Image (cartoon, one colour):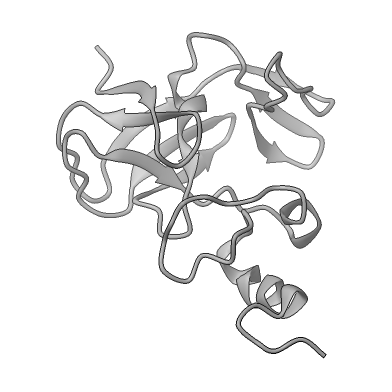
Length: 149
């Protein structure tokens, strides 16, 4: 039995929601799919459902059985992806209440962030999906909050 379900999200399209309470450190859901050696291609909606295992290896998570593909990015995530060999678990970073959307940091680099807007609504969100350690760089790039030259 899944303890999560996909449904409409205020962040983007379909999100992944808890159907029960989770405690910090608890495994929420496994990201499943076929391991591939070329980057997965976008689906019919232009979305790529993939997690990189290591250089040149991805889990192509586009299959309907992979409910974890619906987890959206947030700049203040309540979960994180934890790889363990060829398995990736989504694990709670804090207690998560039933009905709450499951989110994690997609970890995009600065180049990828330029073409991926973020709509998470978190305080301090730079408006782009970018890994936490790189957010300062994206703020500097866009000079958000500063007068233009």
